[in-house]
Length: 171
Image (cartoon, rainbow, N blue to C red; front, top):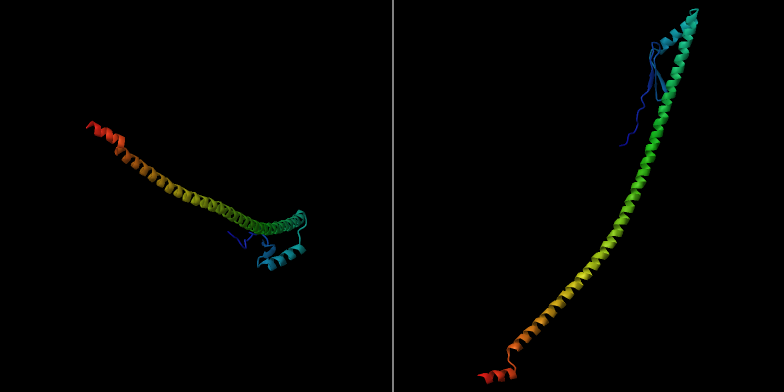
């Protein structure tokens, strides 16, 4: 969201006489300025006596002061605009720097976690291999026990010589 070339709206002084617009610290006057200036010069040579002459001079003084105020306002706006532009640029640089640092830290954490996960997966694989080996040994033991049990059962069905002679004596 970059705004380049923001225009500062000018302040205008409007009255019945010559109209001046202040924009970017420069004066822009109406095309009728020359005609009005010569009319003002002629009226300055011929002034009515009495209270109107001081009124005319007071109006001129007020116009000049208003024009100066307008120029000061526009200069202040330009300074504010330059300050905001510098602030925005400085803030962009700081945000960019912080973002890069955060991204770098994030990748460091990812790398650390990946190492931990890899170590645990290796341990898990080793334990699963040991479990498989123990399972095979347990099956062998079970098979051996089964074989021994069957042998015992077969032997118990075969009469011993004493049992055989006892059985023979009964008959």
